[in-house]
Length: 384
Ligand SMILES: [Mg+2]
Image (tube, rainbow, N blue to C red):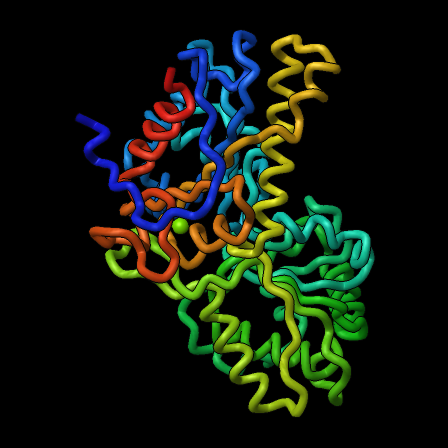
């Protein structure tokens, strides 16, 4: 029997009893019951995907959150520390890989909070670092003067003395239609403007160059090659030391890059590096996920022709928010810090591979796969 797969965590935090339900329907919008709705946050890497491959029965599990016509019936979001592409592109890619329709608003990435800093840096020169399309991500958020570190580096001759030994080619995303005169003008402009902030959007690709150029930017007050100056602001999308990809052992993440940059910077600069890291396990990330899930719920209710009064009556009603993750230190620890409404479920398909619960950050429930987790949630929420 399927429920035998579940190992209920030995750890139990004080929490209110989950509501007993009167309807067998999975929909939190069932009009027969006035029961408080629930929402789900899925981590991506190591839970629903390994690389680009769906794992743990994720397509089947997600399909259960939609009705027969493919309409969403249970509010859920993806809550990942990963990134590198815009939320709209990621939603489209996830939809294709998992076989369901995903809205950009359902995708919360490590760099999604950078959207909220746009007013401060809208017209300032900022540098975006990481795999994928970091500058395109920031442009989509409204940053008007953002350069990828590839492009930024290309304007400073010999800034990376190891470049001639690197066998790969970098394709700086310089506008292909721009003339050489425009490029020359751009070069002068970049070489005379101070960078006001650096954003580590996704995992850096060329650590040696990125550490070198970031140290240059940060020590000089934003203009490599000049005398030292006040450190521009530095933001990291997450602080994950390791993450699970397709290789059997965990890979070094953005947190490892941060440690390397910080260690080197603090050896060559008298004032220690100042920075801000976003991403799970910060409680505000979970609060933001709650707000987004609530908006989804509101839209679902509008679609189902609920009246404004009824909607307002139910909002703020999420009795339980489930976090399904593979990393105890990040996903589970974050859910524990986010408050009593969060119920954490740890899968064994990623970073965590233990038999029992994690000793330091035990989840409310440990299961083998995301499909087991969804099965548990739907049984629990729809128990008559
Ligand atoms: Mg993960």
